[in-house]
Amino acid sequence: MYLLISIILSSILGFLLWMTGPLGGIVAFGIVVGCIFRGLYLLNDIHTRISSISPKEDKAQKAYREYLEEKRK
Image 1: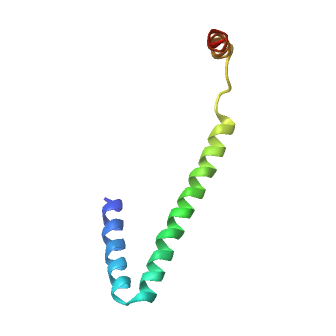
Image 2: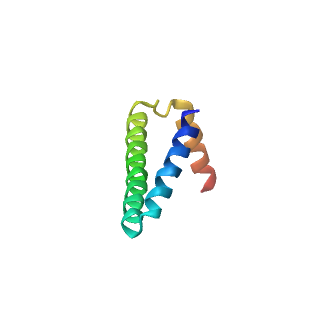
Image 3: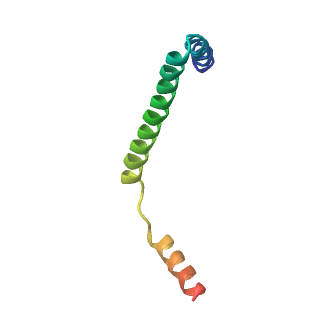
């Protein structure tokens, strides 16, 4: 529900900024690009945190990987 409200309000804000001319378009573009970069930064941060606590390769996975490598040769 909050996502739908956020999308509607963002669309209204974007339309209003677009109607103000080139300056509004630049501001709207800056807002969108800033949100995209912030989202990518947060995703990268989440990935690094999860990968540091994720379980490492166990003996069975290591043996299977080595078997596949030998089979390729």
